[in-house]
Image 1: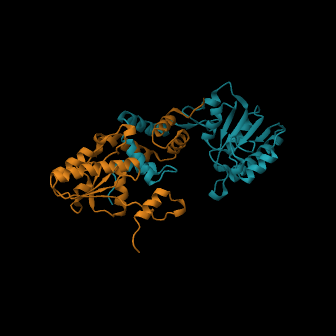
Image 2: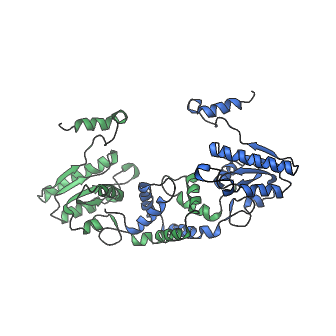
Length: 206
Length: 206
C-alpha cells in the first residue's frame, strides 16, 4: 500500500499512541505539522525531549511540579488544614480555574478499580494517610473523586481509613464528599434518573 | 491562576495549534506524554524537527514525497494516461487503501473558494493544465474533488479549462466526476434529500 513519507508517518504513528486519536486523525494532524513554522516545531521538539526530566511529583500532594514542592503547597495563603482528594492532576486545574477553593490538594493518580487490578496500595492512598497522620493541623478532607462506581468506592475506602485514624489518635477530622445534583445549564429532559434522584434528595429550601 | 508546569504547558500550547484540539484536550494529551517512554519521545522530537526539511512535493503530481518524484509517479505499473484530481494528499491515501485505482494523481492542495479568496491560481490548477499540455499520452481525467459547493465549482472550472485545451490541440480527453449516491452501509432514513435525489438520478438497472 502506498503510504505517507516516512517522517510524516513517524509523527502520525506517535500521535496514534495518544488517547482518542485514530489513524485518520493522526495522519491529518501530522500533515498539519507541515504548515507550522520551523521555529515552533523545534521549540515543541525540545519541550518534548525535556518533558520527563523536568517534571516531578510534589513531595507533599503529588501534583506535577518542576521543583520539589508544587506552587499550591508552597503558597502561604492556602489553608493547609483542608485537603481535597482528587483522582488526577487535571482535576486540580478545573477547581483552580474557578478560584473556588482555598485549601490544598492530594492527587491519588488513579482510583481503586478491582477489574483493572488497581488496589488502594497502587495509588497514593497510603501517602494520604501518612500525610494526615504526620500533620496534626489537618482537620478537613473533601473527597472529590469522580461521581461513578470506582470513584465512589475509592471515596468510601478512604473515608473508612481516615475515620479509623481519627479515632485512634483522638482527632476530629471532618470528611465530606462533593454534592450531587443537576449540573448548571442542564436540561431535566436529558438528565439520567440517578442524577435526578440525587438532585431530589439534595434539594434545597427556597 | 495555578497552571501546569511550564514544559507540560508548552507541549499543551503547541497541541492547541492543531485543528480540533481545544485547551482541555491539549492538557490531557500533554499529561499523557509523561507516560510514554523517553526513547519514543526523543524519536518523536527528532521526527518533528526533521519533518520540513525531508518533505517535498512531487514535481509531477504534488503528492508528498521524500524524493523529487513520489512513489506513485515512479511506479512503472501505474497507468500514466489516467489522472485523478484530488484536493488533498490524504484523499490519495483513501483511494490507495482500497487498491481500487491504477492510474496516477494530481493534488490541487485546496479548492477554488472565493469566500476565502482562493482562486484557480492559488492551487495547483495551472500546473495540472501544464502537465496535460506537455504529455500527449494523457487521455483521461477523473475529478475527485469533494462533493460540496466548492469541490463542485472547482471540478466545473477544471472541466472547462481541459475542454478548451483538448479542442485547441485536437486531442481526445475523457473527463469524468466521481459518482454520487448513497454511501454503502447508510440508512435511507438518515440520508439528506440531495443525496437521495442523486441516488435516484443515478439508479442502476437490476
